[in-house]
Length: 405
Image (spheres, rainbow, N blue to C red):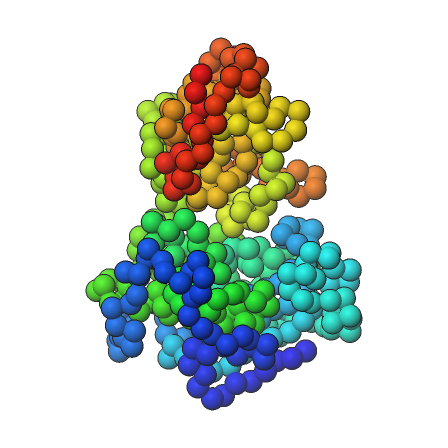
């Protein structure tokens, strides 16, 4: 197992031997409307740590055989140890999952079965890794994903993992820059002019995440603000350390209760505002959007945007539907039957509602269910499939399609 010691001050430079040279954004990324995001003082370092964030911490990242923690395994762990806001040490190891890799994982990461053959098993790696982490706070991008895998792997080998203080740069970015549609690691490193591409290797991604963490710290410090660490009991649902987020509270999704969405509310009228009772409707096409859904915990409630649109393929191509958008990304649509029952409840300009992640299917697919008022009388949609006119408009969130009848 390659546990590399880096005693010299590496600052914020990449430490992966395959890391690409950083450079400014090119092409469509050369100019961004978020130029105002440049930190007011790039060298700001609060001497007394008055921004609420730790100066000593560990940033981790994993590569896995898939997206389902209960069915997939970790194949690589990469982490950097930070002292005084500078990287001083690293941990990097491949892990033999005991199974062949899907071709998509090989293409994404460059990790092959041959590279994993003879590498240590996860049961041997976990104690060494968490001993190396020690009592340090843990930072990651979409850290819920990694922590779910650590928890599942620990349970499989009967290892008791610690419950570290967790901070998520994904949630920090959402809180600091709600005007931005996307908050993937690749989006952040381009937005902050750190690098052009995410490498999808654990160690280099951890190093880039550390740069993003410090960039957002400097940005907030330059504005004269700070953060308050928010902790949860479960490591898998640990949220970003930001004063702009409230502590999560669980609720039951039975058509009653108080809504507590964890993400930024989109613009638009809420279709269940002031309604004491409602029903939830499943979103079709969940299997195609697991990467998006797995950014959240199954206990999370989220805001979604609802737009009138049309089915693009299949038996009902051209028929009206209700599209569902989550954090600016397409998350599926309603079936023809459910559209006929709820179409009039969504304003022509679009609306917003609450959604939650339902129980996983036998294949491990996470389901998304949206809150709607109780159904109106079913509409006959077939007549509109032939006379409907599609008007493509911009995709800034106001509306993607308009449906005229």
